[in-house]
Image (tube, rainbow, N blue to C red; front, side, top):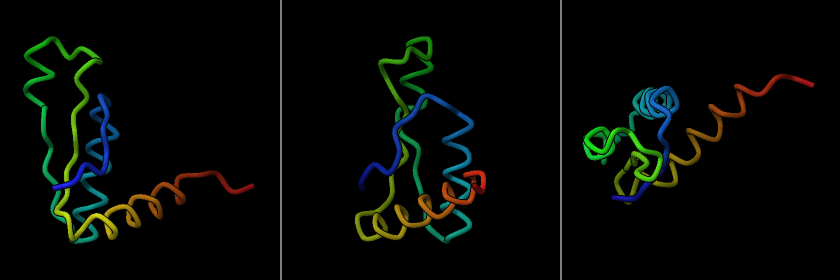
Length: 73
């Protein structure tokens, strides 16, 4: 498993999980409960992980989705 995203922002993590799910890529969220147990301190970001063989596809899917969020010039 490889980390595709590290964040404390639950909205960003949920968005990334949805993008990956739409692309057919399984993602696992780690450290969710560890961060919550410590009061959601910023020192413990949650990690969104994908399988080693899905890393390239996941990176591409998130990059394409992020590009779609950018306002047109």
